[in-house]
Image (cartoon, rainbow, N blue to C red; front, side, top):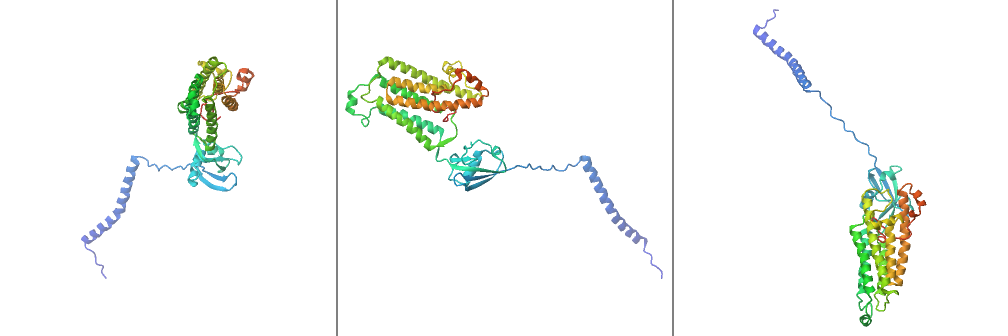
Length: 378
């Protein structure tokens, strides 16, 4: 019935245990408060920046066969900054049998072929672009075309000039003496094509594009065939000199050299104009007298080329050279007309200058045969 009282020492011990238990949460709160003050005093905490993902619209290019209209492949994930050449490279990975220079792409079946530099974004009406594929055949570079076309005539003419027994009768060749015009014609002919080769390598800006192999075969057939015909007549043992003798030969040779020099200086002037970056100006004469022909025609390089072959015709007085000069004049006239129309498009307001007779179209011409300042066919 009497409640037993705990000793004072036991009571103090229990009070200490409960006191320590109560003080622990208080110490934790104080420690957290001090840590918070330390962090706040060090500076405000900044949340990590949010990554902004830019939305890039990729295009999908569907490539169909231009003849059968059947789908060949689909090239997807094309960035807007890509060019048509990038599409051709991806197309080549899917279809390895067609390398980029052999691939011809058009927006329409019968439309013009698109340039490799064309931007995909400029061609897109929606996120899906439909292009029509045409196999361009085996391709060669323009440099290969020019070097092949011009090296052939140089070597072929020399073969006829040496009068091999397989070409001419050995006895007849030994009996006949060569007229000086035969040697002069060989020098002029070689000079003409050596100039073309050197300008192709060191002057002209050759396009990095390609052309079908069949085009090179056509060009070689034309140049090589006519060279064989011309060289055969001029170097023949029965060849007769011009009617007016040395006066005719000397005058024609002088005109030939003038035209060759003028042709070279015009090509150099066109290259320098393009290097200046001003592609919207009409070619104009400079202090060089050979460039003054710009005041009469728009393509003096073509004029000088035809002048070279006309003077070579007068110097040798042979039918094959005359036929070749006539065909070259017709071809140069066509190239000159196209080049002149291109100048009219590039130079606004130039049509008003056409009232002046000096700004007429060039219906003759001469330069690197079919080399422009960029080294591509006109």
